[in-house]
Image (cartoon, rainbow, N blue to C red; front, side):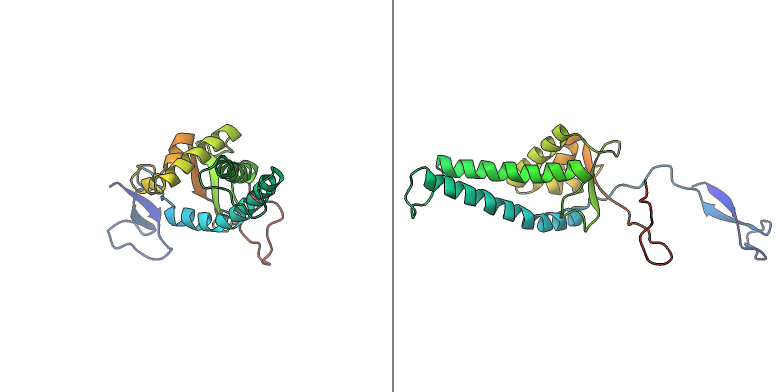
Length: 193
């Protein structure tokens, strides 16, 4: 490890036979630190996102139930398991959840559940990914969930700490720095760029 000299506080020697005013510190490492997998933050965001998603599913179910009865089925008749109606409801729930996620990611890079934890979806260059890429991310994340979350846990093994859906869509989840406050405790007048 190379050493670099930096000025020391005035009037104090460094005890190494060097002139007063210099200290030796290790040189910065040549490779960047490995990114964090953010598994805990991802799970917390998913937990928070369950609230609006369940509300959307309830709305889909209400519309489907109304449609089922308007189609001539008896009021007390249930939708049969694995019937065409039930598959249509599941597909509608998946699509509504996808709209919630992709529109949120497209608009500001965050869903409601990602905001308190300062998580954001960005493309490889750090910008806003296009809608097509976000739908690919959502589709691969759905496969990951169906596989028992393997795509999420994969981030612990991946050299870049990316999940299946991060890697497939060439996006990543980053943690955004906190906004700084001014001296009087209010938010800054202009947002940081």
